[in-house]
Amino acid sequence: MEEHKKRLYIWIIVGVVVALGIIILAFSNGGADSAKKIVETVTNTEESLPGVVSAPVPNNAEVPQASTVAREKLPEGTIELSISPSGFSPSEFTVSRGQTVTLAITSTDKSHTFAFKDPSLGSVALNAGPGQTSAVNFIAPDKAGEYIFRCDLPGHEDNGEVGKMIVK
Image 1 (tube, rainbow, N blue to C red):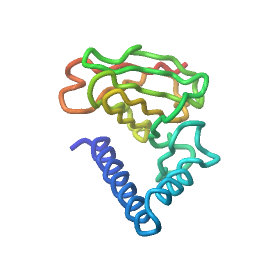
Image 2: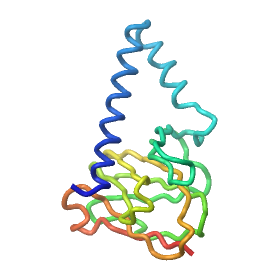
Image 3: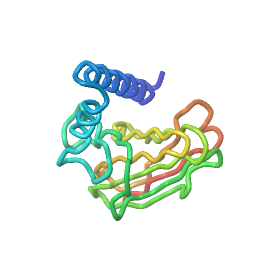
């Protein structure tokens, strides 16, 4: 199995375990009101973007940040992509070297993912369910060039769900 798929599966498992832990903790400490308070505490950190739920980052600050799920309006300047069986729209975007990038994907039909092929951007991974928008913050590479991204669900890349980020 490719390394990025392994990382994606690990993040999914970690997310499910954390969610179950919050639910169990909430119901053992007073029910739904406690669950809501716990979720608000976890999601309203100073480091979060407004309206974005941050996931933990298992690496240093120089590495792109882990995926987040958008809950409200995205910040101004967010690069927004939609994804469907016909591919990403737009299929490419341009950023500057070292730029802090906020990227959001919206699935228009079923579940999709977003991942770069370049291992230096391996921490940038998004999942979006039907009609869902997910966002991530990361720092663009210092090296100019083209960085290919794709939906890495089985068969999706082969069906044309690919694009590129151009770093100038």
